[in-house]
Length: 205
Image (cartoon, rainbow, N blue to C red; front, side, top):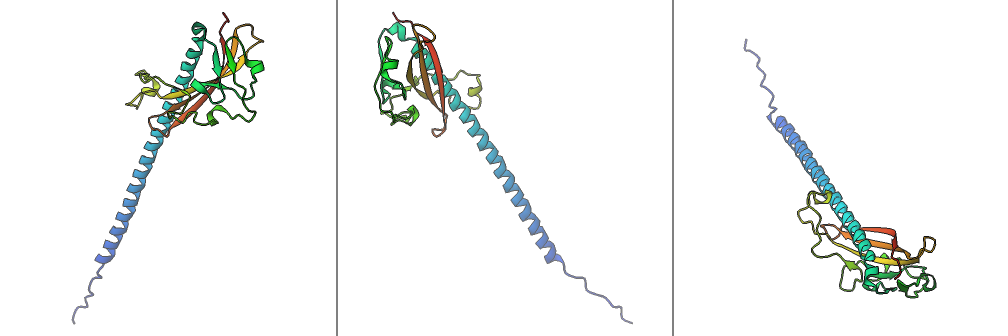
């Protein structure tokens, strides 16, 4: 009798197909992981830049407060206008009859006057922008929270001051102001706006 041998089945093509499928799946997983890591990195960088812009805006608030504090020493009457000339803005719905004092005068504006950050050219960072710009040599101090992950720590902010009139309830020489400050991050498109009402004791001389 002749032995009955069966030829083995050729499965090499099927095994190659499985290997190719596994390689494609692994490649997709690697790409997805890289994209996720890249997205997390960009998100972290954007968050850091927003924090930098916020601190710049807050630095603008401090600079504005110091500027207001120097006014009695200057002994020069301030004039607040509708178009925010020299960063001094007439506030919406604040009438000259109420606000005018020994310290300042207010331009009589239309009742439709918008908020300062909505007015033409204010905070657009151009030559026509009347807001007060940060000093070119102002920097974030090394070691502070905003110094982390930022190689260029130049502070960039602009601010305007609205005069709200004398605070008659608080006594003579007490005035109310609203400061609006805009800060920029390292990316020019990253910005933050901060607004704060302040009470200042600027006694009339």
